Length: 242
Image (cartoon, rainbow, N blue to C red; front, side, top):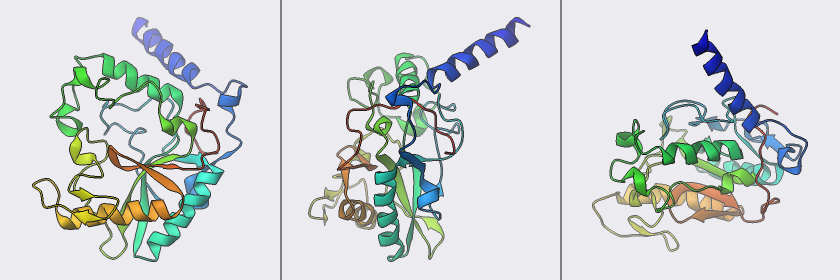
């Protein structure tokens, strides 16, 4: 009985952390599900499942869906159309991320003993340095609602395109300039990624740039709408179908 009460107590805490209070931060009216705008987008919402750097479902992810502000979703549709003309579909790992999810990451990072997923996502990084190296931060651009983590899927081979690295890998291998200059698209021979893998990253990057997104210098999969509508608002509502 005590165990059931204990579990129920923490379930309530997680719910309260992402509850829909009537505040500007809880207002989802200007958001939409990505698949309502890009119906053929592939979703692999890592934080709804357990295959992520924490190893558990993340607080605030109530359903395996992806949300964006309407402005960002419309721009992503243009990206999708661009890539489909080249034979690719977009595959989404994450988009809008509620503040309670970021808080979950912070709690996990502070627990130095929890290294269950280290070999999969950060084998070469000491967990005690995650804050120092800014792999984990108390605020995330995702929480403003116009940032998306994605890759591309080859419609000819019906396989995810090889980017020379995995989503959420903590290391320099994830940097867009790993293996070359992402601004000019010039490959630099190295022992980390191949010329084909670098070129694949450039296909995604260039499509995102053409349609109003800006990249992050530490993650090849991460893009934010340049003209994001809520640059100073960190939303709190949960990830679920709207």
